[in-house]
Length: 297
Image (cartoon, rainbow, N blue to C red; front, side, top):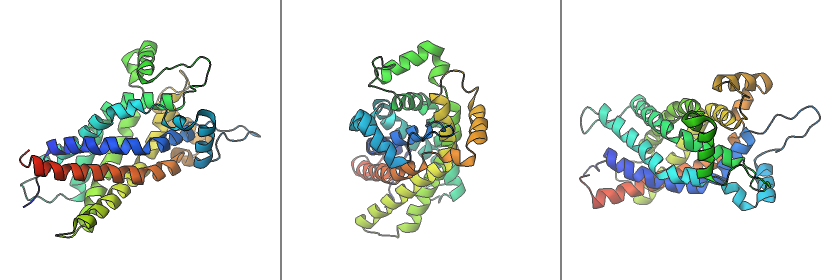
């Protein structure tokens, strides 16, 4: 009997997977943000960080291990609902594309469904991304720290520029998430379909989930990294430095060239495979439980 994969089940299980993924991958996300926002050294100056390991070492030396988890409350608070909406959007779009219950989705249909999920999610995640990036760069050891936490950061962003300031950089988040989410869901479903034969054992199915989820996560960031760099720099820049995201792009290309669009890629890929493997493991296990407990949902 074919398991029913309804959008509501995608919503529940996507939330479970998202919570697991964020918890595991946050330290590498902190390193990514620090590498992305590291200023270009002037002639004769040394770079702040020589790479991913150096960044981690200096962060721990300065702030302790907790420095790698700075700002985690904002994404953790939205991890379950945002990933739930992400998977729900994908499930809804797949359902709308289906011609009948036996419909087999093509790669282009899976990509289209993923882009819809990315669009919906990026609007919700924009403010959380802004707060997360600011807190990841925040100096808690300062005698007069600017933010006491995620809620305080949100309040001050609103006080400084209203709701527009809270949502600063959301346009770049949309530019990142639409193509990246399309690639993410398309690659996962396609790889899983290729790797799992009929009547495969549970252990084999789980290994395929881990591999497919990990690869999907890496492909997401290979596609989405340039927009993510622009978003991060725009969101964390002091007022007046950039007019808009296009201005960030123009100045980055003038000073760093195309390679600047992939600053922080190494920690992202190190993080992406296990985080997204775990996200999909949580999703698939949740789906099996739902199909057992509430098969008609």
